Length: 552
Image (cartoon, rainbow, N blue to C red):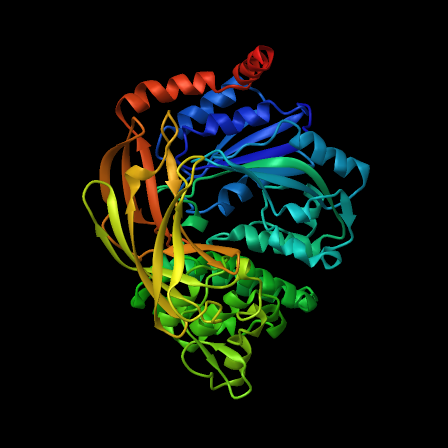
């Protein structure tokens, strides 16, 4: 048999529906001399039958079935490495794909210069809306060959094993295999590969298509989307400790600050947005697992984080669970704390009292947020719904409380507006915010959703209302935070002749904004939208413009 140039392993478990798509992407590679190993982690659905059919259709496909389920990705990958015949190896998950030139481009980089592995860009595709982005684009923007990870420690953020093509001799020389019996195996394997490689090449071309299902059912969610499980937290921290030990053993302890920053900025940050939705028992267990590890991280890693993230970390380490929930809402957005306290030297600190320890004073110091001096359009305010009452039809009465810890708003009532844009035309509902005490205002706004001006074909999607403030001719638009949980409100309405089902609900993730969802129904859904889709095409639009211009 002809020796293949590259072996690509497709790991699969109970994924008969998507396996053919993954294998098809390999059979369509422009570099054809490849071996395809389907490594089945003892599936219990139709995966074996599908895999055998795929193997019968193409002599390059081999089917490997593990005798029992391992519960992870490592064992099926390792068993495939054992039987792989090619000098270069790649890995593919059954729910993803390789772009047509992935093998060709990565192999060419190997042949251009002898390196331990090559890697390229990963394209992420949201399954729910089709949105495409590049994973860590700043790390794969240009073609380069590095003599070890110390040349660019930022690459620790790119911990995917599937974006790379490995030289078999490199893996065997270091007995490098995927750790079995643990989750987040990619992070340890990639850290070891980076640390052991004498040289590796990065190319800017896309070499992997990663399909993201953010709202997948719990039973089928990826490991990263199972953050609600305390065992998931424990697994992630356990892997980090293994990486730390490897760095020390491999003489690369100098990378700890970079690796610790990656953990705080990526791994911890993934949990941080969910913290407002966790109960006391969950948060207490989370802190019990996380805090001992946080105490081992380099101080310099904390200093590189944005201030709001440092605040959340410090409140967690202090055991202030209510404070954690409050501070974690709005991460990544200019959302202010409810309260700021000035120290003896006028330093502004997060919360209602001056911190008592040196570390807390350092981490909760909000000076760099410039609450009092930053441009008004980017100022920090906090808008919360304190009461939400349904009215007749699709009307809502909202009580909004605005916190202004930087005292940017003048004393007295404030003119505000509620902004909503379900289409191209914005609905603005004016209301008044009255002072409650210095830095705190409250007002009531009545929102009638039937007043929203929708397109003729209706509107399908989600929108989050914003609060607009004005000061001396300048405007500021900010998030409107909803109560963390309230019963969804649903109504059927007609606006501009278009019928819709409108649902008002809390966002349920991230900051927890007020969320309004439009779903066309009736004739709007069955007739108007399909017709407009056919008409609203580039050729039709261009023809319409030509006719219009000719008639002028």
